[in-house]
Image (cartoon, rainbow, N blue to C red; front, side, top):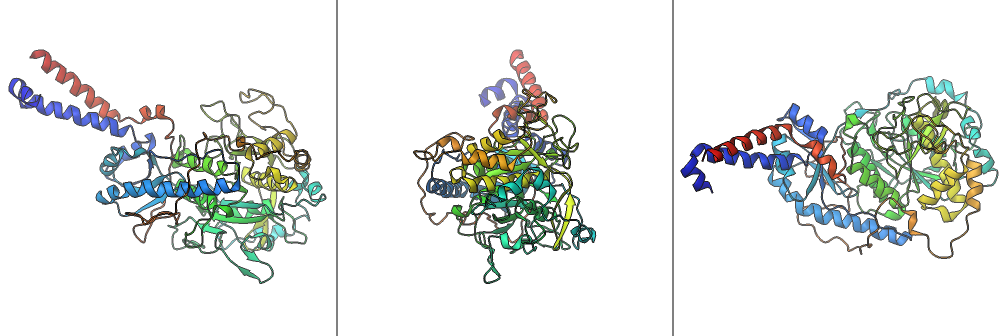
Length: 582
């Protein structure tokens, strides 16, 4: 064909044909780019952007029914990622990529490169999507050293926080149910672990010896904090450089044994992961924390143990569009994996109300997340700041439930208490109620579908048709209504022990597939992946942020390069004209 073109149409025709082929390849490759990532590259093609490489092979959770099956599958998921990433990483190294972070929970790799390198990566057959990775600030709270505002508020703390009375938590305590045996995790700005109202609830603390063991109980996903950061990087013990994380976990478990009872489940234990620095987060940090909590490791990131995972995670953060999170797969896959392993995701809906459709940032937008809105103080009326549904461009009703998030008193560094408002303050109360319900009836432990049903059916209904709500209950302002801890426990106590094993419907958010056997990892060819949740090829790490929807191939067309389309059209038209002349 080349000879034919050369003899009959000249060198120009051959060059034009090659030009046409090259841009066909360009079009195919750019379809792999998330739209936001492609836009970033087009603004500065030579600049390095941080992004995720989402691999085609993603192992979904099956419908597990026993703790042994959960553990076996999580370890199998780690092994699967080890194998697929080991095949791909030599290709990255050949391109000169020497710094990267791997994730087994979503089978993806976070790197930085310019557009030319990204285009070559996009053409690799093992690559499903390239997804933007950005960072944004969410919380503007006092930085350490914390101001005297907290000290002033200490005197205002009631013996039992009023927000807990509003949702009938003390009535549950009167039954002797206080969350014993349940573990609640926080993924946030960190925790002042030795706060008087939190130290005895920390799973890593031994009250008898007064010693702490942070292995399997704490992980720091912040690797690039500036030199002024109070907690630094990779803190080996829980630390909070913002106060937000200490406050939220306090609303779940806080109790100093005296006059400060601020947490809904004061006999539950907590573990934690820092996924934001001074209130600034990124998807890579969110995913890293979810990965740690799915299979906690020792303090060096080795020897993951799924049996040490929590029952509930408090998620009072958001991954907004500014971080690349409007259509996502990497973060969604991580959240779905967590939920499908029997971990309840209590997620703040956001503080972008009162506009309809303002619940617009993952993970609050996911169906597998139990999304929590806020009421006004001492009221069942939705707070003005509380984000409303529906989830944009869908018919998904959010939030799922509300709790009082306005003027909530809780723990705050250092050794103090502070009143804050936001859906961030409501979500940990739901986590605490989940702990109470799970203790009340062990049948409900890790049974996400039934836990949701208990909370929904026992909530104080608040009918509303605003924001295009398809039903009066649930609706896009209140969900199923105001949580009621006492009524939830009463419903839980009526659920009988199943005659057989737990129904597979306990994990409804993924398609069922056979559970693979776990084979201990053999020596890797290029990489030592998971016994460690992190894999670095240099001493430094570039943290950033991103996500997209690999599962929705229809979105790929939106990511296609307009430049490629233009040149393809021109090249095709010119080539057709030359052939017609022949």
